Image 1 (cartoon, protein in one colour):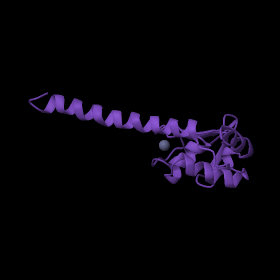
Image 2 (cartoon, rainbow, N blue to C red):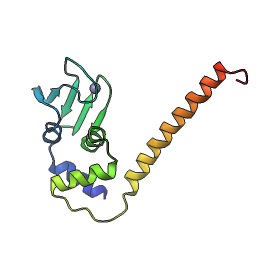
Image 3 (cartoon, rainbow, N blue to C red):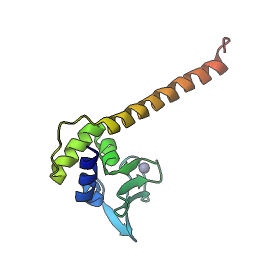
Length: 130
Ligand code: ZN
């Protein structure tokens, strides 16, 4: 399945994928556009075909082509994978997506951890018990 991810990345140009959502202009070796994730007037959304990255320096969203699709479509990695596999013409086997799922589960845990930490910190300062 890691191979499918690599295969998809090799077959798709990230700039083509991104340009379905964002109008991009050439800026040296990269491309620039208005960030689709936050409102802005001067472009801080950079796409680097060389690195296969699409990233906003304003709101720090984006990443590789999968991350970009996940964020812009609001979908899970598995769905982004299916979508891009179809586009790239890469056949996915029904193997479990272990490494990637493990990764997003970890992200979720981090998020939960952050929320919990915030809760405790707030409690600490705003309640008597704290
Ligand atoms: Zn942004």
